[in-house]
Image 1 (cartoon, rainbow, N blue to C red):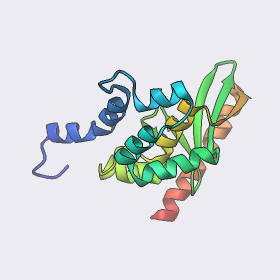
Image 2 (image 1 turned 120 degrees about the vertical axis):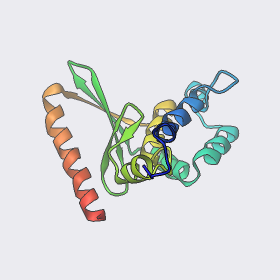
Image 3 (image 1 turned 60 degrees about the vertical axis):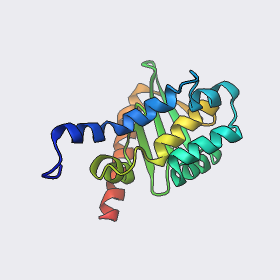
Length: 163
């Protein structure tokens, strides 16, 4: 936080990512862009334009990721815990609750610099989920810890390479 920036300004700016996602869900017509995609299982020209206008190149990267089926849903049994992974350019990234991604871009652009509202991995996950274009893996709960450790190691090695 800069010297001239108050805590209130910082908080408002930090909440802008969540507001952007809420705005996509709570449009005045009652149906969000993502709900329209989920309902129709397709992306209309209007929806494409609105998403591109909102996210620019991040939307293009997200759409390419979805079309290449690089979004993965892991369901662990018997707990039914679900974890989403997006295979990105530099590794596999864990998505938590549609508001956090383990990628370096999310850390730098969204959390630290606050110059973006999301990374393309979260956007890809949301689009893939709305359209039903993702792979699902069902695994026993006993595999969860091992997989999380692997994904954490991949994410850390990417961050070290970029520094």
